[in-house]
Every structure is written in C-alpha cells, then in structure tokens.
Length: 250
Ligand SMILES: N[C@H](CCC[C@H](N)C(=O)O)C(=O)O
Image 1 (cartoon, rainbow, N blue to C red):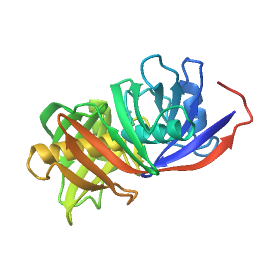
Image 2: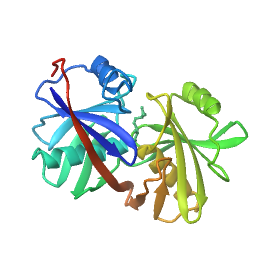
Image 3: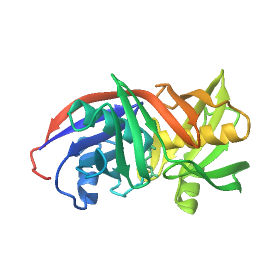
Image 4: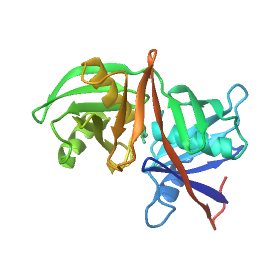
C-alpha cells in the first residue's frame, strides 16, 4: 500500500484514499509514529462522497479523531487535485462541516468553518485566555513575545479544557503563533485552526485587520483573512514523498 507524505507549513500528514470506510485509530498511531512509522502529526483518509468531492477521516498522531484540521485540509486538497480526485476548487466533508478549498500550484487556500467564541475570560498562568472553536477548540492568549512557550502550562490547560493551546504576539507587522496540539501532545511547527483562532481573537480585539501574514514556529508564512463570517487560510503545501508500506491495509 502506498501512502503520500505531505507538509503544510510544517504540519505534516500521511494521506491516502480508499473506498473502505472504517475505524482507523490504530492505523493512524502506526503510520504517524516518528520512529516506527512514516512519521506525521496526523493521518488523513479520503473517501468518495455522493454530494461533495470527497469526505475525509482525520486522525491525530495519537489515533484520536478530530473534527477539523486547517493545514490538513490544505494538504488533502492538494492530494485530491493532483490525483484527479477533485477539481482545483473543491468542497469536501469533514467532521466540522463542509470545507471549500482552492489549489493554485503549491499554494492552497482553505475556507474554514465560522469561528465560535466559547469563552473570553479564562484566567490562568497570569494570562487571559479565549476559548475559540475554529473547527476544533483552541485556547488563545496574546503575549509580548512568543520566544518562550511554557509547555508545562500548555499541557495543563490542554488537559483542563480538552483543547489545543496557543500563544500569539504581533511582532514586526506579523502575527506570530505557537501551538501545543491536542492529539500530538506537543508543540507542532504549525497549526492552521490554531493560527485562525489567534487571528480571530486579534481581529475581534482590534489588534489586527481583516487580513494578516501569520508566522508559525516553522517560519513558513501563511495568510489569514476574514471572508464574511468565515476565515481563510492560505499557504504553501508540499508533497514530500510517497511511502510503500510492506504491511497491507485499506
Ligand atoms: N490537533 C487538533 C486537530 C488538528 C489541528 C491542526 N493540525 C490544524 O492544522 O488545524 C485537535 O485535535 O483539535
């Protein structure tokens, strides 16, 4: 069985497509394992759908299911287009709803589901956090500089709120974001829905305009923008390699 490896701004995924819809929690753990498997932050499986270009299953590296993944949606769109499974402008079904994406060479733009503010007044670790749902839940705090990210704090908040944890700062006209990702249980090099949640809080508080360049830990810049009541996430996607797996699965 051949699977594709993708990087979307440093957030990396194993992707394949199949006609067989079944649970793949264990397969996700196996394929995403950094030493024993291909190694990735998540597994994406594309399935046919009668109304949309495809439906997907998204699993975090620990095998947990997540409703949405912003960077994963961009990687899945590039995979689908490059394999003739979808046109360059597509609509596909995720656990958070229907996502629209557009592929333009290596640049892929996803339109996320409308952000929902769950809580704006969470006081913890001398910071005020917002809890924002951008397809999955994200805690967001603005800090002066993102040079230091206390992962001990992040792990505690992730546990307490069952959410991803983000710190953000506006530096040199850029929105810098660092994310501790639920289901990876560590900081990742980029998190699309996390960057979107930080952008949304910054925009709601008048800190940033309706469009801004965002810099994740990977240093691979993306563009976040408001589009009506939704948000768009635009950035590069790379198909890094294909892996021929000895053990067969579907
Ligand atoms: N770890 C997230 C899902 C992946 C989100 C992230 N990779 C993105 O690009 O949005 C969660 O379980 O809520």
